[in-house]
Length: 426
Ligand code: PMP
Image (cartoon, rainbow, N blue to C red; front, side, top):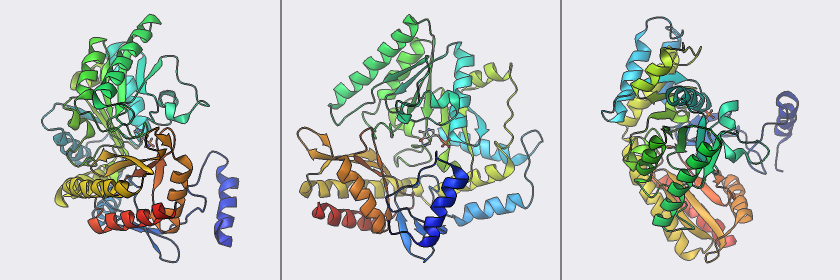
């Protein structure tokens, strides 16, 4: 639909060269050749407002990151088996974001690999194998992580040592009941693992529960969960691939909202603003236990160019006040959606923290019936109006609002006004 002949040809080339497993966004796929700040540009030079991308989280083609990568690539790029200061400077700067907690860092190239490594660390330290995740969690693509990612749906079986628990669903339940369902689910999952002779190794959670439908509340929940999993001999792994690097506005890391200290924290996506760097931090005794038995080497993980990109990202977040911006513009945007909800009954709920919001669409506010079709229509119509967004949640009836951290109030107004127009048409 609406594709130019060369774009139609690109789709055919994709099918031929890349095969069936890849998917494009939108009924009318979109073609980009350039990115800058909060915008992506098509070949005609039209600007699209990016309200989706948390990889180029501090802005597309950020000049400081580009410069750091280019400078380091022109100087030296090698691996972690030679002495070089770049990994040390970066690891120390990263560890300093944890507010005095004692951690050590290990580097990978993707969030999936970071979670895979976290599972190996947790299993080595606890002697258990059981992993507990939320019902619609997504943690990545390696074999051991995909089998802990129910978001893939029924075609991808969960591992026999994997148990799922409900996310803290504060839309269908009040906060106290949502918390009780989550914690009771955790206790039941621990017992069920034990009944099957499986020792729990870890509870892993996305600290904003994004693929479950964005549930930032109730804060404090993860501290209670940590106590339960530790009493059973397991660890708490905070997956910060979505929530980390200042996105939640009030805190640099999502777990910090819950006043908990995880045993392992995994991270990725925004870490290099598009450059593939990911990794984890873990308590030293956990890394000691693993490291005294096993050598860790990841060919590309923690290379000097990746570390230069990571360092430039940390510096830019600080120098440009991006965490404060996420808090301020995030609150403005959330209030804007709440105002829209006063006139548009399709909006059932607005949730989120900082610049990660979920807007849940329902055809009936009392019965909370998911408005999947309407949500898909809105996402496709926004694309025609040059605003990029996607859906989220188990029923695909939520707008996933996850712009870059430098998103401005004017950008927020553009999104809100366009959405208002579309909702009037429905
Ligand atoms: N954890 C979470 C919470 C994620 O959202 C993702 C990616 N969507 C991953 C892990 C996996 O990261 P990657 O795609 O870099 O392997």
